[in-house]
Length: 311
Image (tube, rainbow, N blue to C red; front, side, top):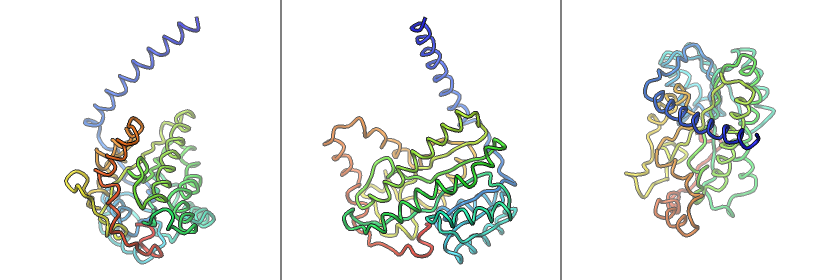
């Protein structure tokens, strides 16, 4: 009986897998993006880069924005632009996402002054841009605090209210480097790989608990034209271009509205997951050919004390 049941469950899984796969393909082209007007959207690292662009795109859709950054002036500029774009309301907060107690304190402020967050976008990131042995220990810890640990604290602060009403959306901005590391990105790649595992685990926990009204999206960007990556280049700009930040911001917001589980900003980035199938020498050859050894060759490093910290 056990064997018969196992075969039945296997066949059931195969049939459902095919059905859900086809359903997903159809929904991708036919499903209308969800309405976010009036939703409370919190974006970390909103003063510059893709955080700023996501804020402006959500503003056009009539969302209520909660903007976190350590760059107060840059954040105010984003807020002013968002208001002109049509945001229902905009609230700005100074917050160093790498400091747990500060995150919890500012989160409490948001709950009192704005309300329960519906869409939470963990975007704030930094990197050192140095070879592993040249990165000071304190910088490695800072990268992990901002890029990864912050996702724990921020989600812990806002997820309970989403669970209570079975409604919400968690978004983590990961990276292609989280799937396949790159030269001079050891701290950054490690933090982004951790982010992927974190949100996948939370997504499975929510599904197991029956909280299907809470969606999750993991975003895999590539290099972008921001202040943080001004010296970055790619050896194959036609195949792996440095992306326009406005395009990235719009694409991410569109992906969130379509409830994408994984969102690859370049389709070729998804191929990095195939690394497990390659022999060592073949992997190193493709890494060299695709520019992983050279993309950061001219990177000189930039200050992360102000706005660049959350680009």
